[in-house]
Image (tube, rainbow, N blue to C red; front, side):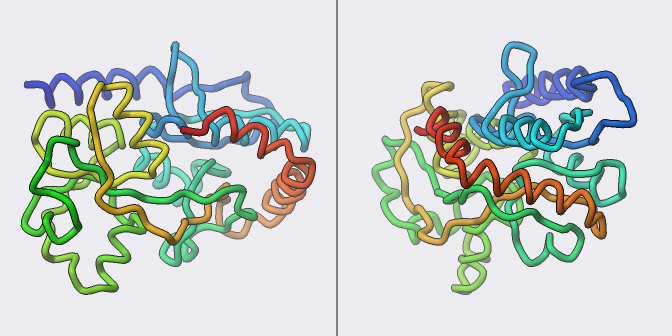
Length: 246
């Protein structure tokens, strides 16, 4: 019942928040963001917010263009970009698979994926203790990649979720034993949902995060790179990121 209520609520949110942030004009860049990845991309008080959203708005200010925002589930946002229905997507982790379909700006930070379990899971102390257990998270995470490289991925029962919020709720409700998500996201959601968690694995290999651009749109890519370089060099993004530290 809890899962049904959550999915219904998410459907309602996604119906409401696929919207324009400004009036659509010829000066708009149509860009997407996900809704369930706090503190990076999420909806709060009926408004889009998060570090990736703030970076995007500052980048577009630098190039004097307005934002036409589409907020949806992560998979839907990625599909919109892949089928040329968007110009860009903010806050996408770079990996070889995605580089086949999208161009990427220079990275503006790194995410470190983490495996969370409940703090009272006394029998879960190391990754091996999760063999045969259900683990929630989205596909193509760095953790999944590392497990594949180590030939241990098939030892886990991985369950794909539409958002990190859903993954954390499944952990909280006992539907899964663990949840995979970036460290900052997991700590944020655990606090929000009053779940006491502990970290079983935190990957040392950070994943670069950038703005993904429709393949071949070099004009837009160059504009965004120029703006990002200015913001990085001036330290503005470091200051902005400090507002979202765990």
